Length: 341
Image (cartoon, rainbow, N blue to C red; front, side, top):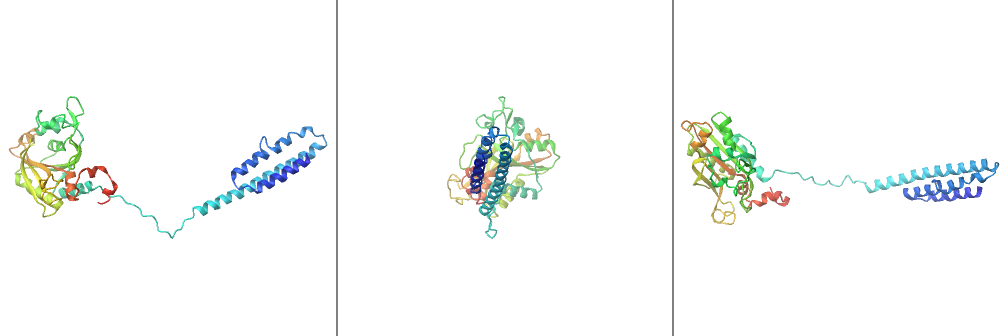
């Protein structure tokens, strides 16, 4: 048994000193010191020895176990140091190498235009109001003088949320004009930007979800001249002092008289192209003098007060300002496109 113990010590110490990985070291520990290891198996044979041999062999076995345990610990320290050194070598940083550029985000082009418009109207004394996107038909249509049979109230044009057509995704931000007249003291100068929803086909200038900026002015002595002057000032501040505008007669149930306002196409300069559908002009807003019935619906006396209202399509303003030919590009969120602005 003595020779066997000495052989185990020699072989184990030699094998431990040559290990290169923690896995190899663990395998040797199990081989010699594990529950079924060579040394453990040999110690189980101690009972076969005579009373005189047992203490001597027991002492030698303990010495072998201690030698192997110490060798394991030393080799583990060596392997850990080697692993740390290799990791440090692999992760060494050259602090003289220039750092990677950090990409900084920026505003979406549409919201750049929105902030500019807000600044313009705030400078003209307007307040900014926000309102619910889920709206009551009473505010979206009825109080705005849109009768039950008006085409805009049809299910093919509007996203209704109830079977009785009483709740819908607002098709305009005009309901905020009603809420303003019901809750604010006169005179009123407000704009209400926000998302609106209509069942439009998707093309270069239309989307079922888009953004509007509705405006309202109510005061004594307001005329159509005030409307035209305000809108021309705003449009020329957005597009430049040489921007050409065109006011066309139109009909809206909540204004009388009513008009639509166009700007000369930024793409073709009025010659006609796919962006303006060959007309040379792009419609940017509808406007008009607030209908007396709308004023009465809000308990405002039309014999004392008058006002004008308007509604911009924010996407179309962005198309014109940044010379974008297709509204769909705004919503696709292609970083290659957006990074240009």
